[in-house]
Image (tube, rainbow, N blue to C red):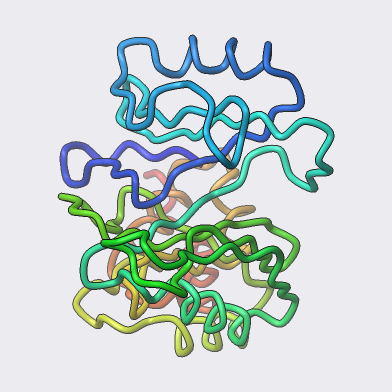
Length: 243
């Protein structure tokens, strides 16, 4: 999902999107398109973990990792990847385990750790790890190198909820910064932003009645955690009949 939010937040490589490619030609094609007018973070080339790989910010500032995986089986084509840097460096594994407790359907996959002599990264921290939450594949890594960025609101993860009980549950488990709570958005204890959204609201936003949408928008802009009953009340309220 894309939102227009003006100049408030800028994309950072703390969350990037890894594209798994089964041919080197596909890597070349995607790299040529995504890196055009962008800023390479790791030049396209051969690395110990892949014969052909590159990491770039595209012309909009969004970060992509394009990787040749050969015949390796992949469950998901594009994988959101979280990089824990600065004060969060070394917490990637803790975060994976935390998310695994919050979400009921979770799995930890392959883990690759830093070894001796890989300073500044601490031995045992995560060089790369795969995990899944509710069927969505993710990856995470630590990086102790100097970075002038961290997680921010420019990229958030949406949790679709069926009822108020689910909203209350995820809000209580994930929210760690009260000042960051607004319009269904929250920040967890690692600084990752989440949106906890009722599916009912998605249906309401598809309505063509401008008066209903205006009332709905006015209602949710006043909220921190979404209240489904109040959203539905605002949406269904009858506007004044035209004189």
